[in-house]
Image (cartoon, rainbow, N blue to C red; front, side, top):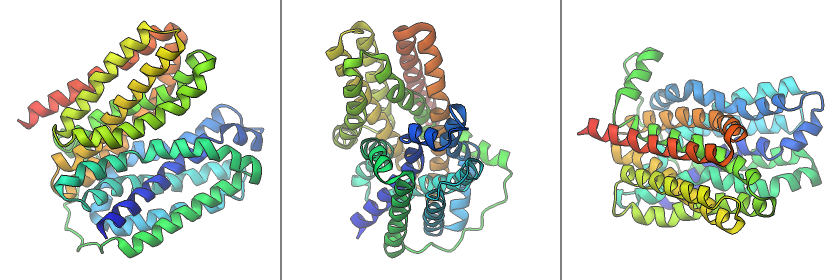
Amino acid sequence: MRVLLALAIWCAGLGAAAQFGKMSVLYDQLGLAYPAHQGVEIGILISLIGTIGLIFGTTSGRIVMARGPRRVMLGALILGAVVSLLQSLMLPYPVMLATRIPEGISHLAIVVVGPTAIAATATPRWQGLVMTLWGSFFGLTFTVLGLYGPEIAETHGIGRLFQYHAIWLLLCAAGLWLLMPRDPPRPDLPQQSLLNLHLTTYRSPTIAAPALGFVCYTVTYVAILTLLPHAVQPAWSTTIAVAMPLVSILVSLTLGVLLLRFVTAVRLVQIGFAITILAALGLFATWGHGPSETIFACVIAASMGIAQGASFAAIPQLNPSPEHRALAAGAIAQLGNLGTTTGTPMLALIIAASGITGLTLFLITFSALGIALHHWQARRRI
């Protein structure tokens, strides 16, 4: 039963990632569907969902504690399904844009409940595995949607992909309605202002630590995944674009899980960032040589996959109580969205100004920052 519950929660995470991915992989088709709204406006349609998490990430952790994870998860899945069904009608652009707000609320609720709920399904021995599995939801969803989403849209129309997404969310809701334990009595939480809630979260060296490392991952990973294939030799562009997310997922679920048996999650995040620094130097040294570029790009993806999975594994390792885990998951959602929102435009400007040198320094800077932030928080915990 626990295995089924963990898989059902993970499937809900795949559905949440698709709330981002279904629009991202259809960028060109959406431009054709809304010819009067090109470029930046299509970009806003894609990214607006992340703004909700950026603003309300920490608040959502408290809402989960107050309302109960089962109630919040089921409500979020049903809301997401309704929104996807509405979007399948290919509404006018302003209305379609407005639907991204409730979809952002749905997305945020799922990604905050998910880590806490899936951690509760496993004993300490297996928590590294289930948390790393949870951490794979974003990369796997984008890979699958990138392979099949445009084809579905071209063959059956954009709306069909949105309908498939709604069906997936409803199936997840049905499964979790059967499998997820009922919520405990609601705790009597003290009243806190939004400012005090953020201070409570980010002052804590246990609650904030996973998110502070995770933002250094998201600011680099999404940007590199998006822009590196366009920066290398054209002959190797497709290979790198396909290989990087797959390598990231496979290494995270195999080597990453194995290493969690021997080192703490925080230490493994630091190891992942350290390997990223070395691989970035290797990419710089071999720039212009297609096979070597591909190898070092895959090493970068693998090391980032390790850092990603270990960041989620750090939530239960550092926070034994469900309340603190919910706040930590909210912080990860908040800072994760900060990274995904800012990383790609930042790296695009850097590459335009200084090419591979800027790209290398970008990777080294944020990887070193991730190591330093975890070192600082570890000293605070001592």
